[in-house]
Image (cartoon, rainbow, N blue to C red; front, side):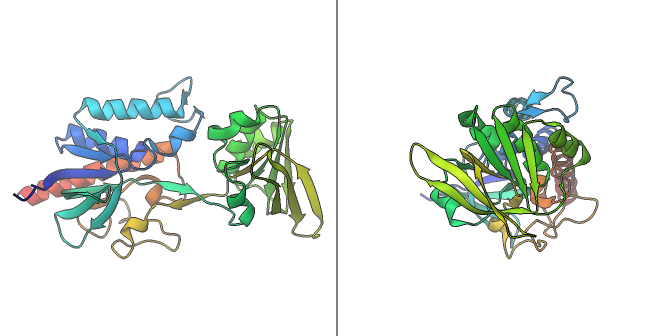
Length: 316
């Protein structure tokens, strides 16, 4: 007997602020949303410590705690939250065919994509060689291991500034390597960086090598080069943190949905709708400008409302 394929009214791929907010709105509209949590349940905020800029938390909140709150709120209204990874989608016809964990197949009347983005790496051999031995892309995940030590952070944007100031609370000294002659971070983050006494910013510097060997000691120093003078310096360090931006998690939708030159999904201006009817994008997967929890939540709301209006139009 052939197994019956599950029919899902609203499938939400991803579980960060965008995915859970979409689930809250979809569940309240009786759209019976199913959330597939993905590789990092809760999204990037589960690797963030203090969140001070999300409305409603007057004293701030820890990132993982906030995501648990959003998840619980979504489930309170009937959201079906599931572990797993979406491994294949076919958006050529509606209802859409979706494969989960390479084994289970479902069909979805509407899909909300909230797969977020992942950290970029420099691409040098030493990153791979010493990954897990002092090289990291998540200060809040691994910073504890470098308490009382010296570390290096690469990058000049908000991510780098946040990681560097966080590490400065734990480490003896933090050195930021910025390849340009200015920080791209917001003014507030720039002020925080410059006001941190044990944080040094080296402008016009790039990483030449990360020195050390895999093992108990791991990273021992970083060789940086001034891209104006070509002068090299060796910075003693036990940790090396890469914070140079993110790549949208959109490989699953290549050749099916329109993307910009960096792989971010394109939506119809003023909406969360992609060019495929019934498919919506929310959060960092479609936002390379703001990339904030609150804007992700806002587009999650938009996606659910757009999906509800679409389903209502199909029913009439």
